[in-house]
Each structure stands twice: as C-alpha cells, then as structure tokens.
Image (cartoon, rainbow, N blue to C red; front, side, top):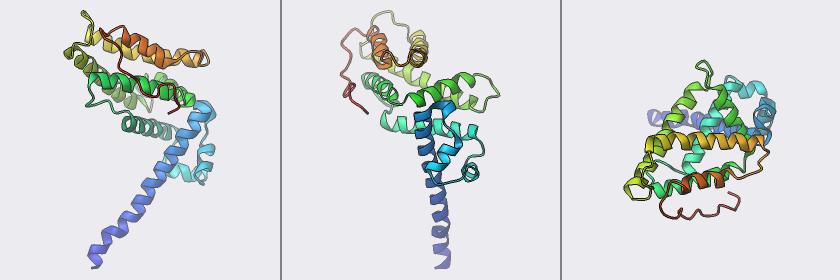
Length: 214
C-alpha cells in the first residue's frame, strides 16, 4: 500500500507548482497587456499572485525568462482558441481575421510581442530561438492555407504561394507596427482582410462576431 500511495504524494506538489506557474503567467500576461513591455514590472506581477519578487524569480529566473514564458503561454492560448493546423483554407482565413481582431483588444500584448520580436533578431537575444521557431511554424501554416485555397479553386490565377506567404506575414507584422505608432487609428483585421480578399476569386468567408469584443 505504501508503494502505491507514494506516486500520489509526489504528484500533489508538482501539480501545485505547475498551477502556480500558470497563475503567474496569466497575471504577467494581464500586466503586460495593460501596461505594455516597459510599463509592466515584476513587482506588479508578483503582487497579483501574492508573491514577493524573490518568490516570483524562484519560478522564473529573470524578467527575460518570464517574458519568453508569457509569449509561449499567449501562443498556447491563441492556438487553443484559434487553431490553425489541420484547418481548411477558408477556416484558416476566418481564424486569421478573428485573431487579428482579438489582438486589438490587448494593445499592451501587441506592443510586448512587437518589441521583443524586433529585439530578438539578434542571435544572442534570449527570445531568438522562440521567435525563429514561431516564424517557421507561422510560415508553414500560411503556406498550407494558401495551398489548400489553391486546390479548392479559391485563389486567383497567378498567385505565387511562396511569395504571398512571405508578403502576408510581413504585412501583418507591419500593420501591427503602424497600428501601434498611429495610436490604433485603423483596424489591422480589416486591412489584413482587404489584402487576403485581393487573392481570392470568390467572396471572403463570413467572419463571426468581428465587431464584438472577444
């Protein structure tokens, strides 16, 4: 009996630690979404989860490590709500526009992502590998979306899938930078949809609740 009970005793603290890390990531995402990359502090995050800064750093060794974990956490939440892999081309189109609209509800998170992505171009940046892996995944997903649209007869003649994949990614990133610098004076979701509509030979699929809060 003692042997059978031992694994259960070990799993309890592990579950609590894993839940504590998730609580910290949820709090950090909220802090950075509200206050932005420079405005959010470890102190703000720690206070939200009832920890000292030292206690927070017990789970995440530095602010850089916490920021990377927050980005990974945000991506996991995004993929859970708006899955891209395994979707048809039309479904992927809808998810892209819905996601762009949802991002606009958290300008601080967009600022965090944009600034870190730019800084992480340098190979020695702590988030370099995260963004390199993410870029490869996004490129793969958009290429697959365009290929599926082509196979379904949705793309206009002459659309180059490889070039359009890169242009679409660059456009989305650039639109977010312009949106931040212009104090959110236009809709990234609508601008992205206009670009994608130009590639199609049929109406854009309906996007549910685009004008509603996520």
